[in-house]
Amino acid sequence: MPYQNRSTAPRGARPGHRSFGGNNQGGQRRSSGGGGNRRGAYIHPSKFINKAVTKAEEVIYESKHEFMDFAFSPDLQHNIVEKGYKIPSAIQDQAIPLILDGRDVIGLANTGTGKTAAFILPIIEKIRGGQMFNSVLIMAPTRELAVQIDEQFREFSRGMRLFSALCVGGMNIERQIRDLRRRPHVIIGTPGRLKDLMKRRELKLDTVEYLVLDEADRMLDMGFINDIREIVDQTSRDRQTLFFSATITPTIQSLVNTFLRDPVEVSVRTSETAEHVEQDIIEARDKDHKLDTLVQMLGGEDFDKVLVFGETKFGVQRLSDHLEQNGFSSVAIHGNKSQSQRQRALKSFKENKVNIMVATDVAARGLDIPNVSHVINFDQPATYEDYVHRIGRTGRGGASGKAFTFVPMQNTQNRR
Ligand code: AMP
Image (cartoon, rainbow, N blue to C red; front, side):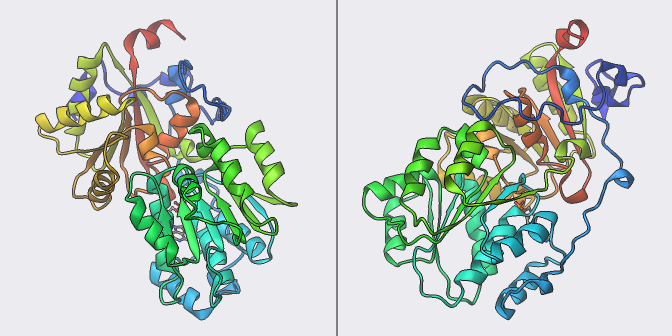
């Protein structure tokens, strides 16, 4: 890798960089507080450096159950086998029996923990064979996450004659109205579109018996709190509520207090993704220097599947265009692209047709993309929490991953 010999090379390989700050261990994970103030938080560069904890030191969760132990129908068991799941993940192991028991659950879990199946599987078991329409409502912060949940629902409920309607912004609303009129069992959507459909009197929620709020902290970050309250208000009071969030802030706690009844908390935040990801900084003088360095890095041998984060929609598009001009095929996902463009881009990255994706935080939130070898923060994230989310796209499921963050040169010299 030619860039390693330059003064801007990642510092991880140099002896002595530990004195700079060393292992961050996730101490400031809650820096954003879940509120709307996402600008201007200075993050010391030492927070972007971490020698990955070696695999031998990892504590592997020992599941108490096998999938066969859960009271699932043979159909569902069959679909789990078909999907290739062998051992329940920690959140599945702990949450599934509680959900089957009818308890409200708070799942403290981030993406990559298997939280989707942790709620989808017991819900399928509960509604299976029934004729209850609109009985499940699943809310998620982004279209992409909602699409992923819908995909998992369809795979796990195959052959059971259970139907879902996907109600997300940026997609044709008429089609969603048609789907809702067909009386689906499960509704999966983002708060804005769900509210829109409610206003048009196309969505009635008084029959909802199972309510899932996925990535609640992200939904609040995105300003959906009032929409969420209005939507949840329309659902049955006797419902079972499952609430997933990576963090518990005071606002989240107040939602939990109003929405859930005698909940059980399951926490699988473990050591979080950050510790398993080798992290380092790259010093750069200015934007051109960053662009040059990035292009050199991408030519490196082990940069197999790279997710590059930029700050703005325009910046992300420009960066993707710049990479194209330099011979690196890439896709960009950001809010200025239509939903179908975003889906197409994501698909080609997931399927390794393109091995570089440039994204904004919002567009990449919660996405499940396997085998990302490197995350590169071309622009620094607004908060440390965003940083942990970003780098959590790599090093998943025990795979090793690396994250590099560009920092201005003077920061590393003057601001220790
Ligand atoms: P999630 O955290 O729900 O986004 O899941 C992350 C990824 O892990 C997805 O690709 C899931 O299909 C996969 N996954 C979830 N649970 C299991 C399991 N028990 N065994 C194997 N893969 C799983």
